[in-house]
Image (cartoon, rainbow, N blue to C red; front, side, top):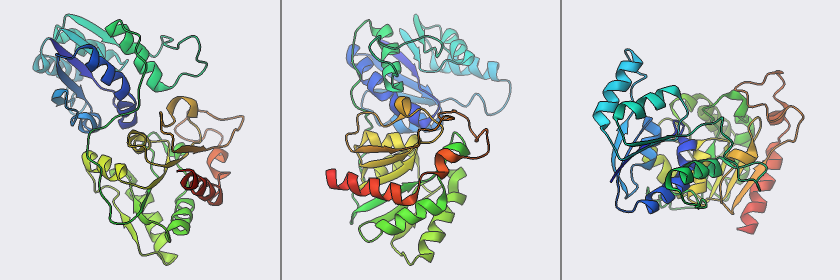
Length: 320
């Protein structure tokens, strides 16, 4: 049997899909697995021992996308089961053009919620979707990544200020820097970020160094996805916004302080990480789910102080 899986586009969503994927692979223990998706998604998951082939979807890059989809479908070929975790029309087209026998596509418009859950987590939604493929009633386990953890020489704190979704999800560099400096006597500091987040990471580094802290390393824009997974997996503490790296930390059970503003913390918080704490404000306008603050105040983030996040980190460390 051959199974094709189109992964979610975003890094965090791909990591949140891993419990459903684990159960899919258990349901078909002898299947040959091919995954297709964005560069970040395929890079994060390609170390899985059950995944035999990974293909990066480059159909948006240049040219006429429907033609590119056709070419990608022919490259992938027919499978016994084709599954897409994406609801986009192009995903439907891709699965159709592969000529696969059975095709299943995740749909945001369908209510996948078990009746006993008021606010299902995205992990549960993905699992409910895959149960429709397998015909089983599996429950989602923990997030799982297979890149080996980095072994740091000293206790290490990771700072992740970025959030690809938009500026509304981002806490402030001076506040990240204040927390990092406050904890620098206990931890070496590593700053993370993607290629588009080097400015905010650089601001944090400069502020921290002005406070006299020397044990800080800025890796923003300098890591591959496998390196990012391994580095985060080896941390002793992680302070982050709602982001893909936050879910990577959950997969490795890293003690994490997650700062939430405009997004739905009940749906996209760390899944099954017993060492996680959320810092947020319960405002009337939140969660607005907007990329930028629609009322221009950004109170959901401004009201969260560095002292509050630092205290949450210390409580988490005491309980760990």
